[in-house]
Length: 164
Length: 281
Image (spheres, rainbow over the protein chains, first blue to last red):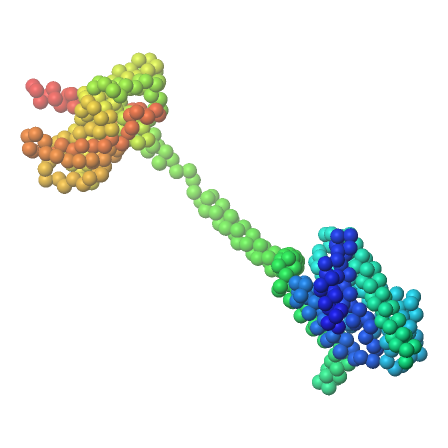
C-alpha cells in the first residue's frame, strides 16, 4: 500500500498525459481487494488511502471522496464480471477473471474513480470537454498501469509456484 | 425503536459511506479556496431563488387579505369623497375677500431694470415701463429682497428711479422690533451700506435687527425690508443714534422689480396740502 502511494505521489502525480490527464493508480489497492474483506474495511481503506493521497497532493477531499466511492461500489461492479457460482472469498485477478474481463472490471472501477476525482477538481461544467478528456486519459492510463502491475504480480506468483 | 436500529444496522455501510462522503465534501469546501467560493456563490443564488419563489407563493396566498384591505380602503375613501362633496355643496363662493382685495390701497406693476448706475453719488435706475403702464413719479419700487427706490421721472415707456443708493434719497424707516422710526440716507461709497438717523438714545438696538419701511410716506407700505443693523454710533449732536445699515438689496445684481401704485396717494397729498394752507392763514 505504501509502495503504491509512493509511486503515485512521487512519479504519477507529475505525469500529465496530453497536458492534463494524471492517472490515479491508488485505486488499484481497492480493485485488487478480495470479496472476503468486509465492506466496512473496504470503506475505511478507501477513505484512509484517499486522505493520505490528499494530504500529500494538496487535493483535500477529492481523492478521499473518489476512493470511498470506488470502495463502496466495487462489490457491485465486481459482481458483473465474476462467475455467479462462487460463494467464498474471491480475489479479482487476471487468472481468476481472465484478461478481458479483468481489463473491463479495472477500467470500470478506474473510470468511476477518475470521473469523481476530476469532476470534484473542476467543480464546474464550464470546461466539460477538458474534464472529460482528463477523465478518459487518466482512466486509460491508470487501467494500463494496473493491468501491467497485475500481470507482473501474476507472473511472479506463477514463477514462485513453478520453483516450488 | 428496534426497527430503526435494525434499519440502521442493515444499511450501516451506506450510512458510513454517506458520512465519509459528507466529510470529504466538507473538507473540500473548507480547505480549497476555489471550491469554497463556488459553493458559497451557488448556495447564495440557490437560497436567493428559493426565497424569491417562497415570497411569490406567500404573496399569492395573501392576495385575498390584500384585496379585502384594498376594498376597505376604497369604501373609506368613497365615504370621504361623499363627505367632501357634501361639505363643498354647503359653501358658496365667498366674494368678501375678493372685493376686499380689489379695494386694497396698493397694486404692483412688474418692471425690469434696463439701465443702472452704481458708481456715482446720484445713482439712477431706468425701468422698461412708463406712464402708459400706469407708473407715475413718487411711486415706490421694490424687489423680492426689499425696497429699491422711488420713481423720479416717467416718460410714456420708461421710468427713472432714484434708488436708495442716491445721496438725495431719504426714506422714512423704522426698526422692526422697537417701533422707533428715523430716516435712511446714503453716503457716497459703499453700495451695500446706508445710514439711519433719528433713533433716540434710549432705544436698545440689537445687531442684525431688521430695518423696514414704516408706511408714513405712503410711497411704500409698511414692513418692506430695507436692511439690517450692522453697527451703531452716536450722532455728532449727541442726541440720537446713527445706525449703519447693511442694505437688503444688492443693487449690482437686481433686475426684476415691482412698482407700487397707491390709489389714495393723491387724495392724501391733497388733504395734507389743504391742512397746511389752512394753518398758514
